[in-house]
Length: 341
Image (cartoon, rainbow, N blue to C red):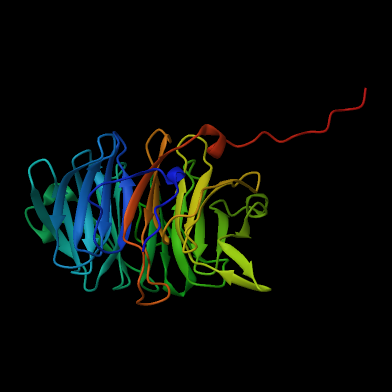
């Protein structure tokens, strides 16, 4: 029998997906939440009223989604298609296709373009305004060293993380070649990459309970600031049990960040001071995705088994929305010793 989650888990949204949650994202302009799932659905929730505003069903598992505006967005998945979905009129357009499943999608407000990353080892850029035919919407195709696992965007800078621990960094205004080609500083497969809100670098997590904090500036002084840390682990009978870190989400006001792992925990970190600020009570299942609302007052948590241990019975998919207390996310000022009189 499934255990009820602790009351501190947050409000549970009604009508959750019926299979693994691949991502969730808050709108930039409201408390709307967009959710993609392996049950082939993309759902739009209004968190403030705990209501399902709309749903689209696709031809296969939906692996990612992002907002365009408050009632429309983009979705990608295992049917290789890139779609624009408009909830208030129930309309969808196919912008184009990849040759294999599409793992990630981002919308660049700066460039007015949709960026997708696929297991066909390419990143493609699309102009959604030309939706009268794929040949008009595709802006470019950029070959990657391996399958794309995660994308992140801040301003005009795009970070592409692939299989084989490759990281390519692009300027969207000149996609002909990466500004930088890097290798992950973590030894194991990349799970998630997220850019710092201030645009100076990115956090990258792996399947082996670690997060790396990286900087774009290649100067010696900037590179001296980079580091990695262990998280989402536990010791049991003298053995270290290590969990994948599936999700990273930055707080939009304070620049601190949350990580979610297959251990069912969400941790809040202060990257500048290298400290953990908070750990929330354990969730019923793996943390598959995280998103802060635009003002940082809410945190959406996808509690959803990510099949890291293969097929097994597991808790049902659930989305929790918790109110964020400032004490959980605000960096603590460094304590300096009081000088002797």
